[in-house]
Length: 238
Image (tube, rainbow, N blue to C red; front, side, top):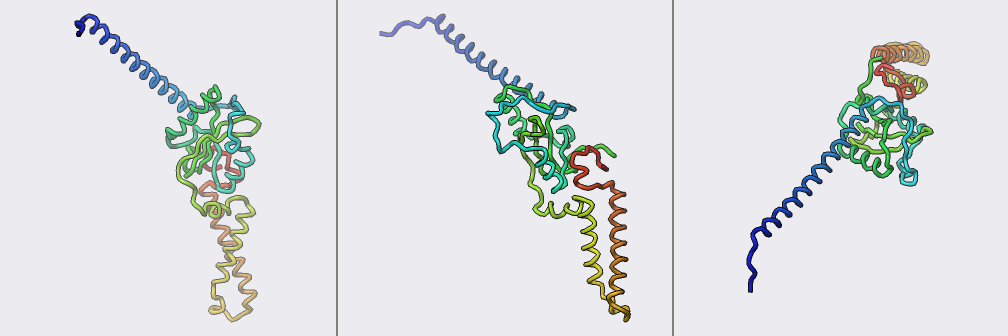
């Protein structure tokens, strides 16, 4: 009722199973090795100096919501005092999710992406001496494709806090308001019995000159500049 066991046949089956398993393991190792090579290549590209102005995207596969013109990026950087520079200036490590998204895009568009740009506060950049990064790749004609965003969101009052540094006019207006406030809370009538209007005007001018002097000294000492002048500058004190 039961056929005899041919141990040679059994041995051959065992070998076939082991060979099949070894092929699977080899294939998996090859895939992982290739994956690591591709990821390293992307990381190297993120830290390279490149003059690439566009990438060969398949426009039918791009998400419209991820495409931004340089003018929109410029306004964002000026309003929130951010920098828009080559990705190689970014201090920290790029998250694995960003690398994965780049690999996915490259496979979808059958291309190798280059010329990466990043939007981030100055403190996150390795700037030459003279909290919320966005990674872009150039499309061409001053358009950029947003690949990935990571990190914490900006402080809700950051736009208001950096507003005085947006332009020279904003800074003068801020100094004017501060001077009016300081002059207004000073009880000059306790120290003088003269013409209060004239005394407050003279005191206001004195305060205005003092505040302006402090701001200018701080600005020159720290090498500060206005938002519209630094948003694409790679220099710390530009």
